[in-house]
Structures are given as structure tokens and as C-alpha cells.
Amino acid sequence: MKTSKTSEPHSSADSPMLIDIDNVSVKFGSDIILKDISLCVHSGEFIGLIGPNGAGKTTLLRTLLGLTKPTSGSIDTDETVIAYVPQRGNIYSSQIPISVLEVVSLGSQGNKNTALQALQKVGLADIANRAFTELSGGQQQRVTIAKALAGNPQIIILDEPTTGIDEAAQQAFYDVLKELDARGITIIIVSHDIDVVLNLVTRVVCLNQTIVYDGKPEDFKIDAYMPSIYNAQHRLLHHHHGEK
Amino acid sequence: MLEIFQYDFMIRALAAGMIIAFVIPALGNFLVARRYSLIADSLAHVSLAGVGAGLLFGVAPILVAVPTTICGAILLEWLRQNRKLSGEISLAILMSGGLALAVVLANLSQGSNTDFTAYLFGSITTTTRGDLVTLAIASVFSLTIIGWNYRSFLHIAFDEDSARIAGHKVRLLNYTLAALTALMVVLSLRIVGGLLISALLVIPVITASNFTRSFLQTVFGSILIACIAVIGGLLLAFYAGIAAGGAIVLAAITLLIASMIWKATA
Image (cartoon, rainbow over all chains, first blue to last red; front, side, top):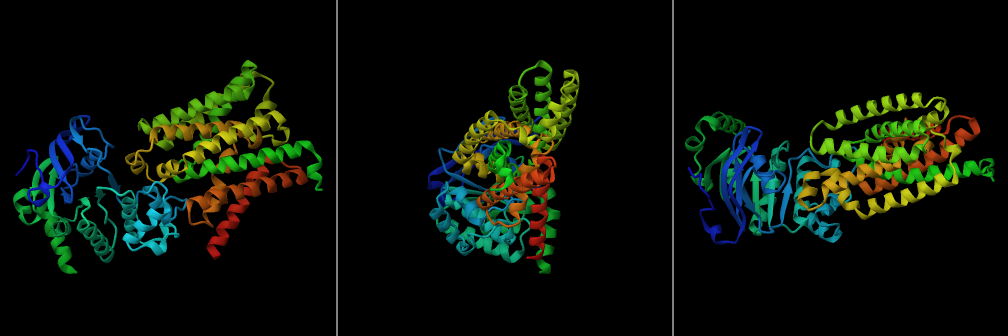
């Protein structure tokens, strides 16, 4: 168990550091959401942030993004360009239509060529003029990735990106993430789907108010690190996957 | 030439209506996208309180209504941003509170009920040259700010967190949009009426969204539909001898129903 300041234990540790989280705590009233979190993120890492409901995953993301102020501690992002892909269903689904190109252009400061190039990277350039709400869940999530890419970010942070998306579309989405990882873009993904995260990322950070594990996915043992919290959930997941 | 154009007051009414048809739906697109459609209704009720105060103290009602309504808009936005009250509750409280204050002040002002009714239901045919000039200046000002910050407003309307991360001045722009809405609502009071103004802010936007696939198309579509509603409503009012504000809103609703039928059968 690692609760002290941690950085990725293998090759990427030699890469430039993009984010330095130093002893961060977040309280809402008397509720402690995050306690003494210290973490370094290096260029090129693919990090899976996992933890049970209420572990503080989304709060940590929001703190990283500057949307929530830490009660104590500091976060140094050193002018790193960070793109954020929020949970699906919360955005762009208004009564008023917004086209795919308009969504992606929001990430490219209005530059249409950059937006189209970003759409090409996720294989959706041919639907640029369609309304966002006309797309399937998987396509919508790839559009939000394109929006993130259009800003030419060093880090992409994704919050539960595959919620409500069918399995085939999830796989296509994860393929896009693997491709971005291969191109050296740093990725932090929050997901409740532990099995998928363990097979996808190069580093796992397990959170439950504080960091309870930070290391390689192959060394992450659910029974050892999260016996009471994850066992039931994990068995269910295995059972669920086994049925398919 | 149509008979309607032989009267100066109708030409002024048409000009005022067209100016409003350009600006109010343009603002409305951003407000509807962020599910804040009722803000115009609430601000209109607050502005009526300002009108009531103006009538009571013998000051030009619009001079009192403009600062009152802008303060109301800033208060609404502050309540929303600081999560003191949920958006819909803030709107409901301001709406009923504004109207209650307006009725009390209008009663205290004694004998000015005709004036007050004009602000409630609109009196577009009494638009003066001065009203037109004020409306035109405020509209150019509002459209310039919207155009200048179009991308920021769009980003905030659909994804406020990402807009904040991208470095847009979200808080300032939210206050700006609320204040611009307040300004245009007040200046439209005498034309469409406090009880009807939100219809022009919302209905053309929803009507246009039945035909469009992008936000920009909806902005231009809603302006076009509002212009058609204003012209249609004024023609109806002139030839049928009915209230212009109500006729404009009914024309807008007719277009909305037609668009919904078109969409359902397309």
C-alpha cells in the first residue's frame, strides 16, 4: 500500500512530469472527500483511476482540472494543456441542436480545419454536419474525444466515458484510446469497470479517500487492496462477463 | 402599397418588432440551450416592479425598470452560481415576487392603470421615435457583445465545466448574458408586454430547432421565424383589430405547431 507521494513505477518516470499533486485534501463541510493525496503524472502515461462509489474519483479529477479548490495542499500542472471528456449524457443534448463540427470546433478555438482533422483521427469526419444528438452513444463519445484532441492537449482526462454505451461501441472507443496512447498522449481514465481498466492502462491508481494502490495493473490484486469494498462488485462483474 | 404602411405608427411598430425579432431570439438560443428559458419571464415580472415604482414616483418607468431588472438578473445569476437556490426555484421566487411588488406599486400609484396595462400586455402601436432609437442602440450593443463572445457563450451553454477549463471567463460571461437579457426584456416591455416577452425568446428558438442540425442554423432560423411572427402578428392585429402583442405571440405559436406537424410527418 502506498500512501506517500507516488509516481509511475516504471519507464515513464523518466519522462517529463506534467502534473504534481502534493498532499491534497478536499473537505465539503465536515465531510472528508480526499485526504493527503500525493501523485505525479508523467508524459506518456496511461493511468486508470479506480475506486468504489464515493471514493473521491470525480472530486480528484475536478480538483486536477481547477474546478474544485483543494482544502489544503497544492497541484502544479506547469501550464500543461489538459483536455476533459465528461460523463456522457450531461452535455450537448439540449433541445437546441449542435452539430458535430460545432462541438469539435469548441476545442479548436473555432478552427474548422483542426476540428476536421481531429474528427478524422477518431474516424468520424464524414458525419461532421450531423446533429450531435442524432449519433449513437459510442459515436457521441468519440466526438468528445475529437473535441479534446482538437485542442492539441498533453493530457486527456476522461470521467466514466463508456457509461451507457454498448459493448461493441465500448471496444471501438477503447481502440481509439489505445491509438492515442501509442502516439504518446497522456491519458487518465476514471472507470468503474475494473476488468477493462486493468487490461487497458499501464498504471493503476486505486482511490478510497486516499490512495490505496499505485502501480502496475498486473500487480493490482483486488482481494489484497480492496477486500471489503470490491469483492462483491468484482464477482458480479466476472459473472456478468462470463455470461456473454 | 398596403394600407398598413400608410400609418407612421404602424411603420414604427413594424421597425420595433423587427429589431426585437433579431435580438430576443438570438439571446434565447443560449438561454434555452442551458435550460434557462424562464429567465425572461422572471425578469419581465421584476421589470414590472420597476415600472410600478416609476409610475408611483413619477419617474419615466423605463429609467427605473432598467436598473431594477439588471439587478434582478445579477441576483438570479449569483443565486445560481453559488447554489444558494436551484435555478428553477430562484426563477419562481423572482417571478412571483416581482409581480406582487409590481401590483402593489401600481395600486399605490393611483389612476395609472392604463399605463401599467400597456407594460403588462404591450402597446406596440404607441412606439415613439425615441423608443425606436433607444431600442436600436441597445440591440446593436447586445448583438455586438453576443457576436464578439459567440464561441464562449456557445461553449458555456453546452458544457460549462469544459468552458471553464478552456479558460473562458464563465462567471463574467454568465452575468453579462443575464444583464443583456434584462436590458432587452425591459426595452421590449412596451412593445410585446411583460407577460408575453418570454414567448418571443423561447418559441422561435424551439420552432427553428425542428428544422435545423446546428446551433448557428438555429440562431438564424429563430430570427427568421420571429420576424415572420412579428409581421404576421402585426398584419393580423391591424386588419382584425386585436392586441398586437398577443397577435405576435399567437402567430409564433402557430408557426411552432406547423413546425411540429412538419417534423412529425417528415
